[in-house]
Amino acid sequence: MTRRLVGAALVMLAVATLVFFMIRLVPGDPIGAMLADSGSPEAREALIRRLGLDQPLIVQFWKWFTGVLQGDFGASIYGSNQPVADILMNAIPKTLSLALLSFIIAIVIAVPAGIISATRKNSAADVGVSFFAFLGLSMPDFWLAIILIIIFAANLQWLPAIGYAPLSDGVWEWFSHLIMPAIAIGTGFSAIIARMIRSSMLEVLQADYMRTAASKGLTQNVMLLRHALPNALIPVITVIGIAFALLISGAVVVENVFSIKGLGRVLIQGIQNRDYPVVQGAVLLVSAFFVLSNLIVDLLYAVIDPRIRYS
Picture 1: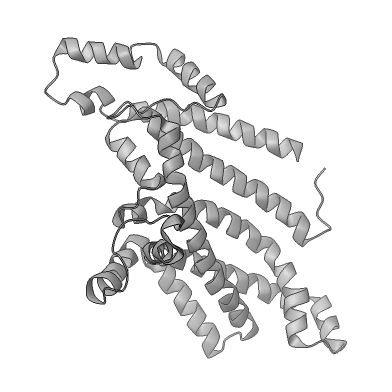
Picture 2: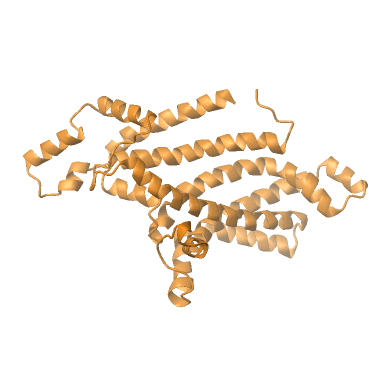
């Protein structure tokens, strides 16, 4: 596990280095975005010096990186000069709430669908699940989001079309603002996970120990829940762990459709404004979610299958 922690730290170092230098390859610069055509050459030079953009890139990187190690992500160079940490802390609850609800929807749909499809191979239920999976994979999440807004917000007026409400405003307010974007994001991932569970379950159901369990007179529910499902989940856990991280990064487009100022919208606005510290902080945070998800998956392997041990 120590080796994995060291590897995770090296990955984060590589991501920090790449995002710092690659964002500066994007055409344009923050000074042009801030001043447009209204600034004089003297004002432009003064602003460059004030932001420290006149220093060599390696010096800028070192100052930013040492600040990150101390929890200081710098300040936004566009607009109010707000600390990046405050911007991210305001966005994280919105993105995590959306990702968590999307993840729950995906699991609630995928696990029963995958089990039913595997235990009723080539039946009408299996065909229906396969059709749903292909349909879910073929629908872009932003397209599904727009359809949901048209039906449930514009026509039926059951749910709010845009915005986010914190839990402090009430559970229903929070849920009603997130359910449509969560469905839009979670549908595609539920299709992926359902197909994975079906494939893994079919392999496990044909194993010798399952035939032995059946010969002992165990009921089908016991065989499925105590023997087949835990063994089938080992390869699926990898997909589920990565899927949760992808839900966070995949919320970029859907957050913009629903005007939710989470990490995705913060990242897009930062790129549009050439706000280097905001983009660097947001990408680094999303990368941290990926690394953390992989570490959790490694730990879950040992919990699900005691035979797996890490030296």
